[in-house]
Amino acid sequence: MITTYAVSLTAEDCGDAERIALIDLVSDWLVAQYPVDSRPAGLSVRVSREASDDPVFRVSITESTPRSTHAETLTVTVALLGTNLSFDMRTVSTPTTSKVVPYRT
Image (cartoon, rainbow, N blue to C red; front, side, top):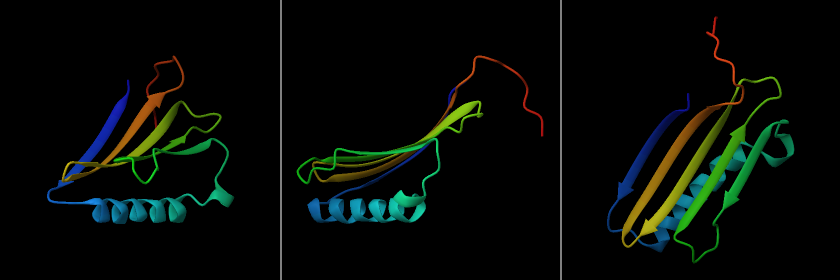
């Protein structure tokens, strides 16, 4: 089973200045939470669509430890469509094994 949690926030009457400010906040959060020099094995960070003229900015963080039964992917998207600025954050948990067993704590 693939589990997804998501939140989307949209603001109206925004422009490029607000888009850049939001991208800067996401970039600062990324550096604070996932520093390049201390990322563990199994953690992948991909920043895509970061050209200054691209209306969409996206960061994907995937964590899958070697003995884990699932992979967690966090995706943050900032998009400016017309004058609507959208912030979307999703986390997806995907199984990496074909076994179906109950989880016991």
